[in-house]
Length: 625
Ligand code: GTP
Ligand code: SPV
Ligand code: MN
Image (cartoon, rainbow, N blue to C red; front, top):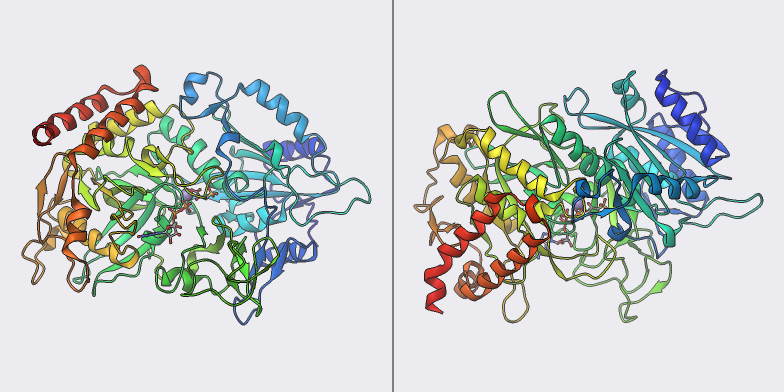
């Protein structure tokens, strides 16, 4: 049973804190998580008996469960996420700010007795590979077995974290689903308090307090709360970067390899790109991480990135043997599925998984479902939680405590118009401008309207724990710290441009390797491409390899430089994919100017200069329209 009351540490600060908070929460019992397999099984057993989870058919999905949440608790809630710095200026205009004193008073009331009738799980977790100079320990107190089990997959959880902690400080993370049980009261399958969700960060004290939700980034506090919002504040002080980025290794047919990092907003393709199965023979992608990158400067003046997580919390809809076979492979076993549909033979299903839907399902709300019923079978933000080591293309260096050297950084989003398939920034400052001004259509990863275009700088809009203007300044600063030759090159990508018929112009997924290939050939040229640098870029039959031509917005692939061999892509699609439409870009520039306004004098001058340079470069073409 889950009642390991013996603390697994002698860290005085931790012991006192747990005792203090257990009294506040009034939990019925305490369990110190050790992170063992036995414990994981017990947590799953608890969820199955309590009606939170269903065990899937082991012949289909070995050692896996399906969890259905309350329909009101299905995604991150950005309006209820707060940065509680002492001064509102430190949270900046892109964050919801609350006074820390007032917020603690509010949460103190909500937490008071919130775990009555429940077990308090003490979840020590390590973000980052053991032994890494950047690795950080957090301890989450939670009353959700789902959260404890998920943390086991997503982080290095239990004794390993306490060993890394020793007598040092940890990031305290308080979490309750906010559904105390009175004596004799029966539990519900997914307890939560959706009307009163609060996800609060105290950057000066490095604390996280979360109430009311059991879902994703609201509740798995190691992920967005610690590894991005709080880590960002630490990184700023200590001279490193915490980013919403995937990390991948890219090898060419000669076996030369570079690493890339890419920032796309939530549900815009990081998991898919991070483990893509290459459509080009000989080219290979290996995955270091799919969501978060911690980046530091190496002694060799290069930028190194590591994945602080140990699992993937990935978007299920759209994942198929065609779009992402490597993900399908890793989802065969040891996975928690959340808010997917259930097949009659005890397997999971979601929209886009197979060509057509099965005849009959149980949908994510537990109701009978048929293809003509007019409802979705899986929630659009249905997710899988699965260990990173199960990824068939996990990179050999994914747990290297030093991280991997980054040769290029990509910024992308969902843009139906305006933004070409790929272009290259002229230099670091221009690259920072591209990151700072990126925009994307909103997705189901956050509650609220999907499909609305918004600026999402560095894909960090919901995840930056301090003033976004200062975040921009930090990025510009990197460009002054490192020699230009060792800075990663910066690219914008957009897999989501649409034609007049509203269809995607680009096939995406495994074919995206064609864009990566062009980038590889570009960076291999300038000496920052690791092994590739020495080997040169000559590819048989690719006379245009790595060649670019400048445009007003950046360097585009020269005609013939993007390898589209064997891809049945109409020439008209290719033309539209790379069109830089002056009217659209004039509108874009105006929108960026409006966006700049909220930052006042905290917007670095260099970003104003970059916008002016863009306008100046556009002038000749504007006169033509
Ligand atoms: P978070 O986990 O929320 O941070 O999301 P993510 O950035 O990892 O997004 P993910 O890779 O899970 O993709 C989200 C959705 O976009 C899925 O439904 C994918 O099928 C779809 N998608 C990913 N890559 C492509 C692509 O190249 N083209 C198209 N058309 N869709 C894509
Ligand atoms: C995202 O929304 O960017 C995610 C999912 O990766 S969550 O963990 O819910 O933040
Ligand atoms: Mn994410």
